[in-house]
Amino acid sequence: MYKYISASILAVLFLSCSEKTKILPIMGERTLVEKTVDGKKIIDTAFHKIGNFNFKNQAGKDITEKSVDGKVYIVDFFFTACPSICPKVKSQMLRVYNKYRKTDDFLILSYTIDPKRDTVGRLAWYANKMNIQAGNWHFLTGKYEKLTQMAAEYLLSAQEDPGAPGGFDHSGHIALIDRKRQIRGFYDGTDPEKVDLLIEDIAILLKEK
Image 1: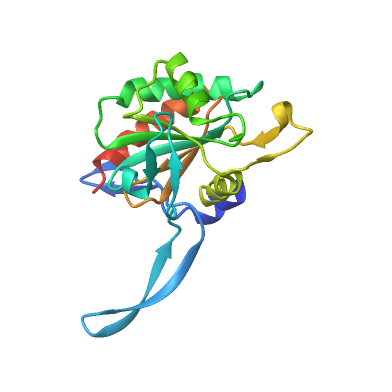
Image 2: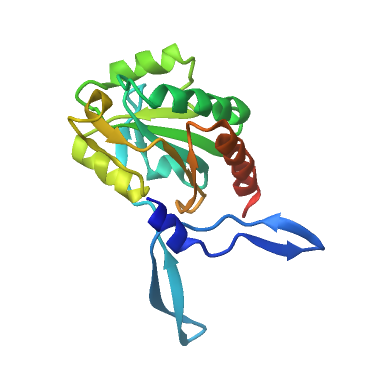
């Protein structure tokens, strides 16, 4: 995953009004596109953007790209029977949830990678155990192939692996997505200090127009 991060950092800091203001990079592959502006053809840069999607949340509601339109959101991949890193990541994500749970233009999407067991009902039980409201934090399920495709869209790893704890190999990282569905950061969800940084960076994106 880190090869994507190192290859796609465009800028980190710039000076404005005599003080440093942090700019978050846009992650992922870039392509050059030709477009017409004021009758002239110019070459512009097109950044990686999360594609369209449709999954069910813990309330049985369809969550699509329209659900995150104009919002800042974070993403992780997990499964409810995970015996390794998932509990650590979820405990840290609870900190983010509690910080921004009343922020209308912020969401959390947690995609299961074990849809056979993680049904809508199972996710509802899991969310209830964590005291999570569906309006701000969506636990999503769907077809396995679609879920792994989404992991690739977010540049995160998630796949079946009989040799991994619980039968699935997945990243413990959390992805931060901006209002344009562009990836703006990756954070180790098992590290409280990295999640502190995530909380700060969410505030930056919420102010970004």
